Image (cartoon, rainbow, N blue to C red):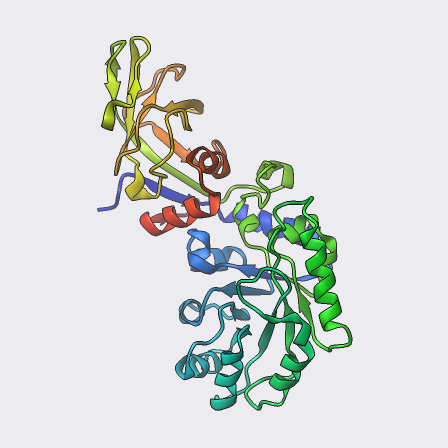
Length: 358
């Protein structure tokens, strides 16, 4: 038995969004980011739909190994790199590319002689201040790696944008300038752009781009709708309408009685809740769609149910599909209502629910 709520993944939307990446960055190869189970969309599902990508980036060696075991033959990049000798050996055995972003990871490669050399992406810190080796010493880090038998000669130089989601923030241009200064004269391919960089900062495109959220049809910019960026949503989260009751003016609905009927009205109950990845803190008024018409939450989100103000929905019936997010409402709109970001909702739903194709 599966849960009443479900996630549908649209492979065509994933393919469309990848084509949008290539349109925006035609001179770059695409390292499609499918970490965290492809942002909740299913890593193998996404890898199949995005087979036209030039490679796939994941968070760690374990995620990459699962893709290899699932039959994925594309280049795979583990963005967190290796943590111990066993991961170095596994990366070599399964031809997994690794990021190097800390001195101890270089020391690890100096100690461990894997069966064959690894391709390394050398991550430089240009202002994100999360991971990455100091960019000012890029030449020293690269030289140290190139001395190692465990490392291939074709090192990729990379950094990550901290403020790319704000088109007007000068920090992005400062990072690009810092990166260019650090790698001037160094051989090797380069990679800077995430989804925001792909869409808004052509100077960050370089040899490889690393799109993530845009592949799934969500805008990396908080002030624009995905349609305005030419993106299609790949995930639809929905649950069936399981009850419709007429409530009287003054009656409270849901836990805590936080929402009160202002008139006699129909209240619906849909079988979807925070156990299904729907945001617990989505307030009354958050949009859902029933029979193609917008309705709104009325009362608190429960573990596996939401209550809905059905005024304005023509002829609702038990069993009707209630869309939590998808084409309408979009995941970003629901996330804003709940005080979070679309990334979180997509990942949570993918962890909680069985996924079906479309």
